[in-house]
Image (cartoon, rainbow, N blue to C red; front, side, top):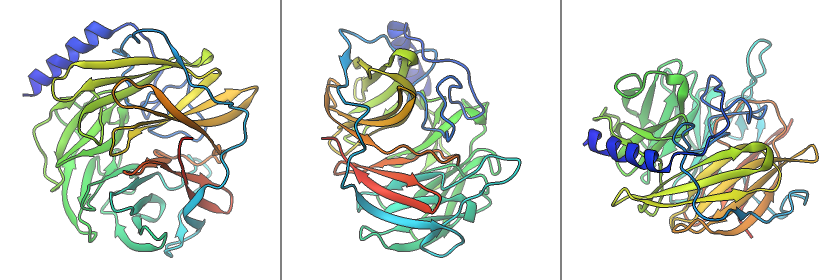
Length: 362
């Protein structure tokens, strides 16, 4: 099965090859040329392979938005916390003298509207209910270097630690450890190039260099046969998607989609942002398959975050929003999470604390 899927991916890549994404790898698999200061696993080429990026078909589409406009106002605050210790309304922040500053590395949402925050500085995952009140804490098992997580439909949490435990630990909805899945093994030689953890049904995947996903195990916490898929699975179950930067200086990028049932190429669409692209901050879908893309742009020396929404079958843009820019130095892995019903929760950090705010395309 693995050979068949890999062969299909190779054929698709060979047929579509031609676009080159900004090169040069940092330790976490992101591109140096397009890496912002507060970088993480989501910053560049989300879901995109550097060497097999597909050739955009047809004319480019401009994502029309005034990048100089102020951020969208009236954002709903889902949850906010001050920097501090282990109280429920506090989240950890670390600023060591000889290492990267850290804040909560990742966040995720489940279908019930619960938000999960990876507070790795305090060695835990905090679950916040739909009413914005902290409900529970999951202590992390030997995962001092945890960087990313994914949540199942029934509230289980897969936590990725590339450097300490070198594994994914699966926790149940009560916080108990179900099992541990080693990262090292067939199909994964360099753990620094793992750029995220993803859950699809009962399967747990890691992403390799913003490109294909490799199945590591199951949501029961057990290792499984390693099989690759060509991108991030959409929540409507119909596609695999990836995105990448073609020419960052002039704002050229693309989104590509593969039909999940047939493994046939569905579309590759080029987008022009109108200014320099510093990085990709988000690539995900809601339950209807609507694609959410967030990019960090630089216009007249000023950074701007642009959120755009795209319909799932052809990738046509359907709306945009301007979001605030995180200017804090803390290293993070995933600053945004898409809700099943639509909209994005975005962690906005200040010197006082962090505010998780909801935005959507207009």
